[in-house]
Amino acid sequence: MKHNYIYAGIAALLLAACGNQTAKAPADHETASQNDFQKQLQTQLLDAKAGDVITIPEGTFYFDRSLSLTVDGVTIRGAGHKKSILSFKNQIAGAEGLLVTASDFTIENLAIEDTKGDALKINEGKNITIRGVRTEWTGGPDVNNGAYGIYPVQTQNVLIEDSIAIGASDAGIYVGQSQNIIMRRNRAEFNVAGMEVENSINADVYNNVATNNTGGILVFNLPNLEQRGYKTRVHNNEVIANNLKNFAHKGAIVASVPAGTGIIISANDQVEIFNNIIKNNKTSNIVVSSYFSIGSMNEKGIKASFDPYPEGIYIHDNIFEGGGNAPAPLEMKALKLAMFGIGGALPDILWDGYINAELPKNTKRLCVQNGAAKVINVDGPGGYKKPSIDQSAYDCTLPVMDEVTF
Image 1: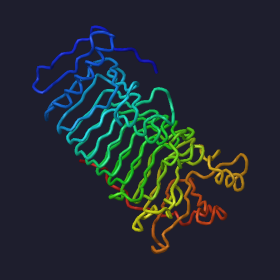
Image 2: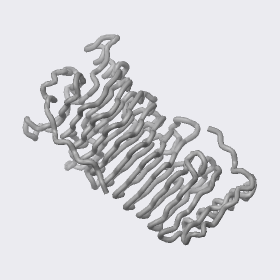
Image 3: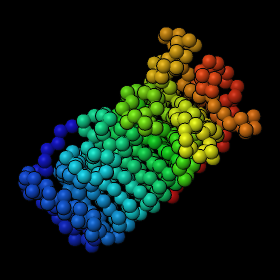
Image 4: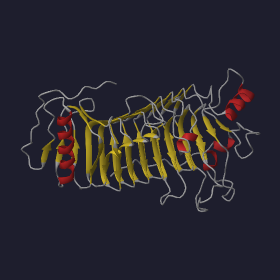
C-alpha cells in the first residue's frame, strides 16, 4: 500500500464545541511540519480532559515515537480508516503506536500503520469502544511486524466493531484477560491469528470475516494468568481459507497454530460455535484441543491449578465446506493419508482427545449437533496411534448461552 505525505494546505479547525480539539495538519511536505504535527498531537493527548474529542483530519501523518493517553473520557476521531492515517513507518522509540491506560475511551474512523510493536494497546480500562479502526503492516506478513493490531487487555465492557486488522505477527484483533466483550462486523486478514479471545469471560464474537490468516478465530486459555476464561459465543461469522504460512516469532504461543485452521478452542470452557460459514481451512475447519497440544504442561513454573482441558464445547448449525484436505502438521498429514487416502480429507472437527479423567464419565466435554459434520479424535495422548471417528460421545446438547450486553 502506498501513502503520500499529507496534502499541502490542509487546514485544521478548532471545533467551537467545548472540549473538541482538531489536530492541525502540516502546511507542507517538510519534515519540520511533520514534527510539528507529532508534537501537537502528543500535547493534546497529554493535556486532554474528560469529555474531549480529539479530531484527526484527513491525511497521512508520520510519527517516530509512541503516542499515549492516560485520561478517562476521551474520544479520538478520524475521518475514516482510508482518510486519517497515523503512520509509524519511521518509528524509532516506543513499544506501541498508541497506548491507552484509561476508561470511557472511544477511538474511531482512523488507521494506525506500520508500528514497531503493537498498533493499538488499551490496558486496564473500562467501557472501551473501538470502531472503524484499521491496523495494518503495509509490507505484508513478516515476522518483524508488531505482534498485535487491536489489543485491549485487562479491560471490561469492550466493543470492537467495523474494524480491520492486517499483518500482525501474533493476533490481528485480540482481547485478553477481560470481561464482557463484543467483537462484531470486523475483518481480519493476513495475520497469524485473525481474532483471539484469551483468558476472557463473557465474549460474543459475531458477524466477522476471518480469512487468509494462519488461524481464523482462536479461543484460548493460557497458564499462569490471574483469570481463567470461559463463556464465549462464536456465531454468524465467515471463517474462510485461513491457510497462511505461520510467521510468528519462535516461542510465541501462536507459533504452534498450524496453517489451515479455521476456529481453534484450546483449554477453554463453555464455548458455543453456531451459525458460522466455515470452509476451505486446509488443516481443519474447527480444532478443539487441550494445552497439551500447544504447550508443555511439564514446563517448569506452570501452576498445578491450571486446567488444560476444554469442556462444555457446543458446536451446532454451522455450514461447513471443504477443509481438512492438506493438513500442515506432519502427524495430521500421515493420519489423513492413512485413514482417508490421497484424495480424502479430515472431518470438519478435530479433537486432540485429551480428557480430565477425574471428571465423571458422563461429563459433556464436546457436543455436536451439526448435520453430517463429524469429529475425529486424533488420540493425542496415544501419540496419534488410535484415532477414532466414533461419533457416539458427541451426540449431546448443551444449554445455549445468552448474548453479551453491557
